[in-house]
Length: 177
Ligand SMILES: Cc1cc2nc3c(=O)[nH]c(=O)nc-3n(C[C@H](O)[C@H](O)[C@H](O)COP(=O)(O)O)c2cc1C
Image (tube, rainbow, N blue to C red):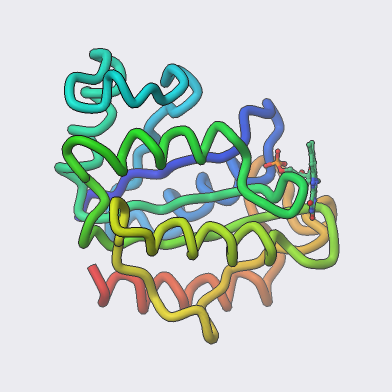
């Protein structure tokens, strides 16, 4: 099983990067997870939606060929970071590579809500006709890593209860894929 990871943070010491690293390492016997760099995608331009720049086309083909996608997002001002929304907008037009694709959403923040608002917003965006991916239902499947400054060490999630919850959600996501 080949999964692609999308990361909504460009920060060097990003907790969401560490969360994706944890997913890649912890479940490597079940799937491979390689991160597609969305920071190099130009801003979406509708004039180019049917013949996007090569970097966008290559990105979309990687998504098209993947068995599923894992999105790790921070929360910026109660929503998803612009870099992630930009990647979603490219995927939603021309060849709609996310339609029907299994997508798992996870997120880490330093606050007490653990990206809840961003994830609710992201689920709404991912349900739009141009994206329309397949997700686990939200009840019991929202990986919301709160107070991240206390839950990561050396670039990996180390908080045992959060890891146990992640195990459960990832098991269900593998079944969905
Ligand atoms: C522009 C900006 C807006 C933010 N807005 C929120 C927010 O709405 N809710 C929240 O919980 N944290 C917010 N934060 C704090 C982030 O949760 C925190 O910076 C987190 O570490 C970002 O994820 P990362 O470590 O993967 O970069 C914000 C941070 C920035 C830089």
